[in-house]
Image (cartoon, rainbow, N blue to C red; front, side):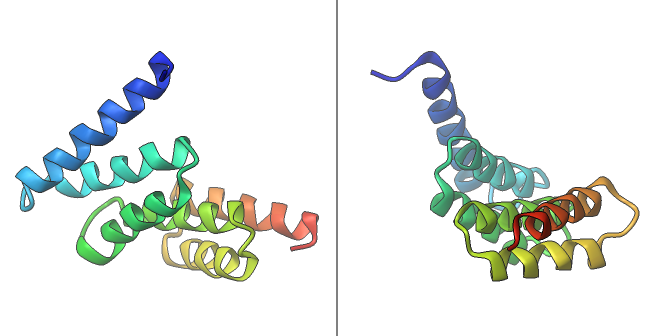
Length: 118
């Protein structure tokens, strides 16, 4: 039996996925795609999360969610212990998106990796 929280996450994933399918050209579609990835990320379903965040990066080049999606891809690679890919993506975020919170978070994770010997 699913906990109430697990059930809400599943419902959210279903709603975001349905929105993306029903409204592929809506201005909110990149956000829905991102939040679908976020649902998978917070429930530690890392492979589906990687796929969904990758769709944001590859499918919506003008989206304001690209930096955040790349950050989460770096975080997932960290969780999967793929240190080289995590470092590459997080470094890309730091270099490509200066002056926002996202590169600061990426740098914090890079610093953590260094402290941990990765």
